[in-house]
Image 1: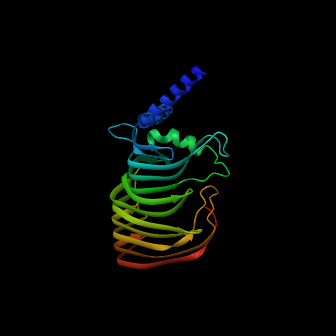
Image 2: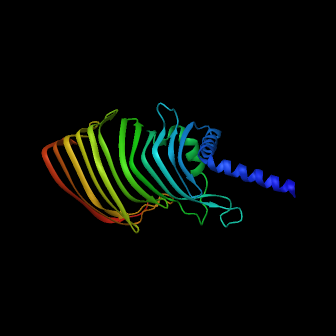
Length: 278
């Protein structure tokens, strides 16, 4: 009995020590888990409780990380071995404050650098039928993307619930892009999107100081405004059946194509019809 009592006391002391040093322990566990997957990372734990985590994360080269978030908050529930979901952690809310991600878009493929193995692992697993993705809130996000046309910078705030985009407010500062005969100078714009039920309302504003598509078309001082709503697309089945209603306006100081050239262009645009898949 005395031996059992001593063992219990030792376990209690160890548990207390682990709890008091839970931030350091969590950091080592998370960093070690990422390193075993070939991903260099640095984690700073600000708060760790039985139902939540707050901290900072940097992944990749410390001097030029592929992903960095100034503050990440995760609310979660811990599943016990005898629970319906089994042993594990189920996140319910993730808040990312000022995240920065570096990516590349080339040959029609998106790469997130050192994050690619992790993305492939998670996207390669079919979700459980009864699982629900967490609410993800992105505040002051930034994506720096290298493309075949040149680098672009995207700024965004977003809200994603159960894998569905509920709100997006994005902006692309003016950039100069060129690849072969395709060129755009001073290209920038803003986009707003809101999902209600199975409908997605969008508003897009683009401007370009100059654009050219080989010898097919070119223009100067161009601006495009589009507004409307469409079916929320199902990315898994590549379906988006339903009514699309869009109105817009295109203006340009000058534009031409197919042997025709015009100045002071001001054209109204409109589309109202049915679409199915893509």
